[in-house]
Length: 395
Ligand code: PHB
Image (cartoon, rainbow, N blue to C red; front, top):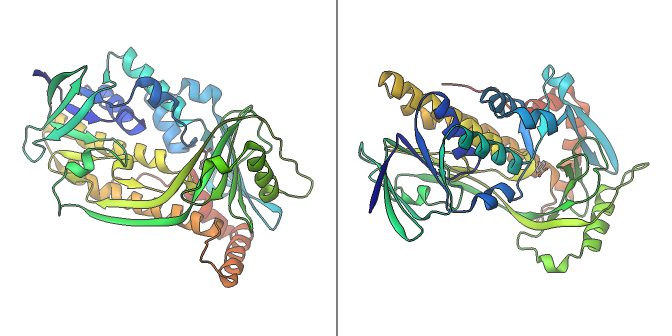
């Protein structure tokens, strides 16, 4: 068995793990990132693409914002469309100048990997059989295999940034964590299309047939979604049928949806999930390993980045002063934000989707809610301030 040592062992090379590793590096703290997929896989998987202002600011401060600033699309509003009419929520006006940036998660991950490698950072891809151990002692370890050899990485702390299906959360003994969960009786069928987006900003649409979303990756590539069954069979959806349904749901007077070749398609399930606490001993969970939000508020990546900012602060305090005060507050500080973002994502989801068990009362109520949100300035402001991202609260 080969032995290695670092200060912080990080499991998972998604946005949470890579941002954490780079933040620690900037504070002079060493880390090793272990990822069971290939670099190509993590850089190409299709995920969301909406960055809050705070996420953009952080990436910029970390020195990984150059391409993001050049290629990202800055938006200062979204459209809510219902009864065939669009209503703009003006973020700039309602939040004192804030906006969001459209830039695919895959691109964020590429930029972070490049920055880690340029700084001599250690990110090991294609590792197997990762096992965090002894994190209830002051000498945690992560055992893993690579190319058939067994390794033991000794570290001071383990960061579980390995996603909802990762190994870190289930490594915590039974009875420690409380899970809070809600599943939704629908999913999203998403496509990436070689078609210039038909609107300048994102369009969230409520329709009798179900929710639809017009989003984008670049000024040439569209990203569109349809509410579908949670276990929808993709083989039943030809490209033609997908466009037909998008045309129907998104239809609006004087507006045209431009079609194009479908480059990729997939079905995403929808759930809300939180574990409390987000820490056990010297193992800290961050991002999707600790919580999942439904995609309607576009919050997943942003929430992961907020977690690791809090974790980096705690680890920095520990290495600079020996104090564990901030580390001890990690879970509590993160969960305050997590639950507010859960509330927002659940609210957006509930307002915009057709519930199979819904009745005509619920549909009228949803339309009234949309009417209210788009006609009352305070109501629109609550949507806007959550969408652009709530301020960080450090206690
Ligand atoms: C996306 O572009 O993938 C996207 C945008 C907004 C959302 C969810 C996903 O709310």
